Length: 263
Image (cartoon, rainbow, N blue to C red):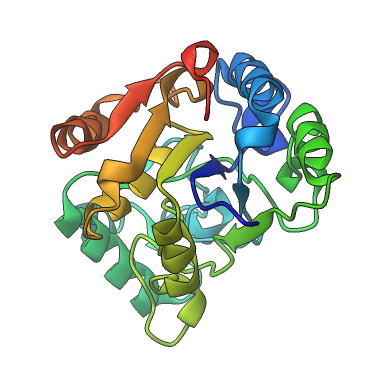
């Protein structure tokens, strides 16, 4: 008999985020993975479903250095912020899809929380960096062997918009359904009594996932954020704080991996 009680949502625990030699390593991620693996070992038979998300990018991506250049042809360094004013003043110019890129940066700025940041090339589709980190994948496979199936959700595949949250891209593109609200995933999440969330990074992809859940009636009240199975990108902690504060006010819970015993 299928149970629809405990769903584990694992956001982007990939090599480029979770390994110290990863392209966009999140400091503390190895410990996050260890605590999540231990949580899964302790509660293996009580986890009814796993949703596993993976960030996937092309080399030429709106968030990668090669997409942009200054007037001398120099690409921005990773962690450079690009604003609409920077584009207007020609400090930085998109080398591809000019109109779409400008529209994206303007729309992102209007949202107010997350500016457009250039990241190191990361989670390139087909690369080792895009793979789920080994220790976690082994544990997922152990969970699956009795006859269970995990659900894999790919995101970030459109190079003209970022896709931090798992439910939709930051700025959806109407011509690309993969960037719009993922109703299949929404319906899966709605089936379960509890949604336990872990992943990287707490400051970005997890925070935006929580933000998107706040937009869906009653979903946030199902949410248990496993706080010590996620870490922030250093220097980017502040923009996500209001999201978590709002989520906790609206009924989300914060728990720690070793303290959770599922029923």
